[in-house]
Amino acid sequence: MNKYKKILLVILIIATIGNAGIFTRNREEDKVSKPFFRHKIYSYPLVERDSVFVSINIDIPYNELQFIKDGDRFRAEYEATILILDEDGQQAFSKIWTDTLFVDDFEKTNSIKLLEDNQLDIKLIPNKYVIKLGIRDINSKKRYFITKSFDYKDYYKKSVIISEMKIEEKEEEKRDSTVESSIFADSDKKKEKVYQLGYKVLSDGGLAKITYKITDTQENEIFNQSYDKIFDEGITNLKFIFDATNLQYKEYILHVNIKLDEEKVSRKKRFRIRWSGMNVHIRNIENAIEQLVYITDNKTIKRMKKAKGEEQKQLFLEFWKSKDPTPGTVKNELMNEYYSRVRYANLHFEGHRKGWRSDMGMIFILFGAPDNVERHPFEVNSRPYEIWYYNNKGKVFYFIDETGFGDYRLANPSQIYY
Image 1: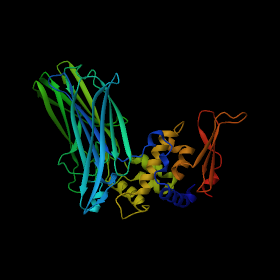
Image 2: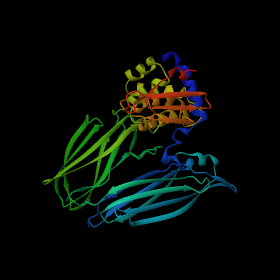
Image 3: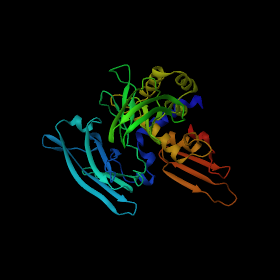
Image 4: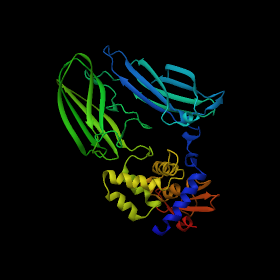
């Protein structure tokens, strides 16, 4: 396929510019358009042990709201909803409120760094809960909601309780992070990338042994260190400072284990190393490089994979910078579209191979969602097959399930190039 790489890249760019965002149009959860908001839900123990302290944070980037001209200023309005149901479906808490934002500079309306911050702190009786968060942009009529389940029923089962954990840059440097617990590895302010883990422990007091361990998602150990700590009775605030300078761009797990008398408790915190401006769906740089196979040659991929650290980062970012359809803006629309399609392919086309490696995944990544799909799962004297129609591109792709186990293969690959 190497000789067709440039042709495929042109096809991809055209598809991206012409159909940005179309790849999720058939998903049930995406029938409601999404003003993007960030949410964090933390739980903390209380000395009385009769309830759980829950902190709900909702941040809305200004660029996700529609501002309209209002005199000499610009105005945005939104409605926020928080609904909490217990395990019996009974309402444990609810709140709906609206707010209005004003800015005097048009550039601020498109800012991804300016945030409308909302925080709500409540106490909940130990139980199982469903927490629903919703945002409606009043001017655009767009709305988005998420649902999270939490089990606090046995929250105080043990005498030692570790709260939710937060990871923050030690100097509290403000960054444009679209994902909770992201660590940025490209700080210009200092060579060392030092971060702080903060959390609370509820106990009856005594001498404890605390062990901190960092592993990757394959459980390969990167760091392991133990400390002795005397806990007072009640709540103890703890901090752990660590250096992420030598961690690569991928996901990690920070483990906290506490042994107090005969009681052992533990908690994990996932975090990932990121670079500013990278697509949020990229969780592992090695995987992201492999996934370039449809739009570049093997030589380029091998060169990126062979490089390490800063060199690998520069090669990867330079590749996408050269393909950016709007180089004057912060976002790289082509990179965002490409890895969003990769993610969709992994969610929907995985079988014997990873979704992005499948034939359906390849076509989806290159051309986006088809305009129409014919499915024939139970034809007499015929293997299951699907037909994908791309009317605007004049292309039709045939997929046949040769094995009967859902592993659909592309029957007419020549259609990719013509």
